[in-house]
Length: 404
Ligand SMILES: Nc1nc2c(c(=O)[nH]1)N[C@H]1C(S)=C(S)[C@@H](COP(=O)(O)O)O[C@H]1N2
Ligand SMILES: [Mo]
Image 1 (tube, rainbow, N blue to C red):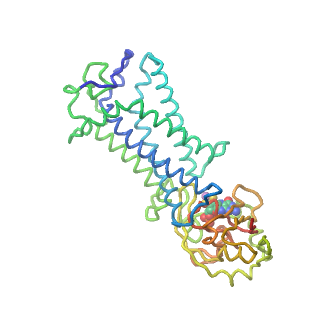
Image 2 (cartoon, helix red, strand yellow):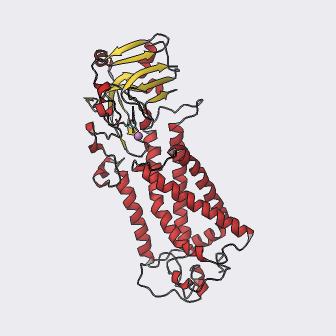
Image 3 (cartoon, rainbow, N blue to C red):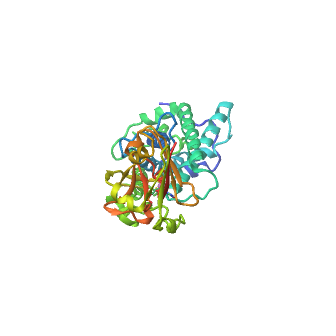
């Protein structure tokens, strides 16, 4: 059997340094397959959750299922996190190719190399910035959402190109069967050197090393992925919370069993929110105001809507409040109105949001969370909570409702 990845360039003298018996087309192809699936799922759920975050005007986000955003964003963040160790191991499995000379052997080969450079660079930036975002850390000056979305298209585009270019190698690598004991290659090197594509230049068997075994490598890769996933997913799956080392927001860290991203103090809104003279201005064809004393009487609707942050954490929660539609109707609007909600918070990116379409009929202006009056950090005296909606769009500490 000929190996289509057999390199044509001659290896440098020190090439044998890279002769790890673990690197093979079979290993790289399998890692690539798993990584490709992870990236694909991550991309699709990313598109969906971006749509839920910034829907097109003519197709507002549905209100059902109420946990929709929890699933799309949860899967997006989890597959993204799992991709990071996988990508590192995959790069390790091929990086000796960086040292092949000449660097560019033909125009097509040059294009292929350039496309891999774009793929590796954008994938690494995408995964690390996404990971830092999940840790609620934004140490860069650009707008995360637009850059992340743009890079998503670039990464997926270059993956498709990469698959097309490497198809013969991928087919060859995946054809190599698993045999018990030796996980990835049918035969030892001496019987089938072609399977060890990166070593064949030396025409010597791989050196005896006491390095990690192939099975050990796979176990370590799996364990690495398991570790980051399991320690992050505690942000979504409550039973895993105690081991959520990478889950920065956990239910038990916030009042009323719900995490808080921005406290009333951090938002400089505490005084305004606690003011007994608080009023909600409802602006529309028939404007009116609600006072604190009106809220208790009106807040009779209950709903179980999860709260899902774009950073990936989420919790199920029970809310009580006033139906948004009722508030809108009293001011002369209806279920087709576009409703803008504005916060008392003086400054910040998330001080207003708009509810459109099916969510208008299901959203609540909440006064209670998990059976208690809202804690000021959760938006006392009144906050928006809507089904199938990103956390950032559930504006806290409301001051006005505008029907447009
Ligand atoms: N006014 C205002 N509302 C806000 C925010 C904010 O910073 N200011 N943060 C949003 C974000 S990012 C999330 S995830 C949810 C979190 O709600 P919680 O603090 O009650 O958990 O509130 C949203 N509402
Ligand atoms: Mo958030």
